[in-house]
Image (cartoon, rainbow, N blue to C red; front, side):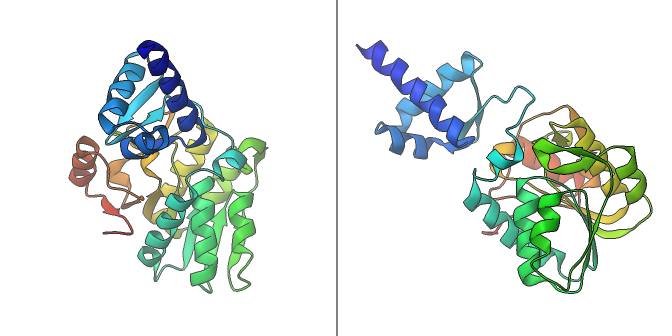
Length: 257
């Protein structure tokens, strides 16, 4: 009977993580109606089985080098991404030219920029970013050409990179599928190539990513931490990752700083 309850509980944990990629132990305990210690033991079991990855104070589903498509991610961690956007915009004050990469979090930030910033120029390969920026008629948006990649609603390829190389920006603003000890990485190799080009053509660079991306690694490593000026997230990174980021000179900004 105990084993049966445990199995059902662990299946429920996997289901909850499917709806929300990163959850804290306290949140899972509340959803399941059990103690935090019980959840910790379940997470240890699931980690040993290779189903999930433990994070500081919680867990994420093991991604196997893939991410949900953009339309699915837009409905996940909305509050966290809104917090990131609110924290990021003040850092960008004074900038006039921006390169913005694709992704759910960058779309949230672009929407916030449209509300709070005027008379700026943005280079992007993301239709989502361009669409929300169009809410502000004082913002000039230049779309990079390229090969359309439908799951991300973005343009990639050699044409995209050549186009970006014609311009300079004050800031490159990028999302990430994963943040590990080496830096930022993306599940889409072509997107990583575009992000690296944006960093190369910008005076400063910013990564905007929620806590579920901490200690995750994906195929396209597009930046070392030494190349990233600011990381904006909804939470502080876990200790080992935080130490590497600090040593690289990358500033970490959260709304509750």
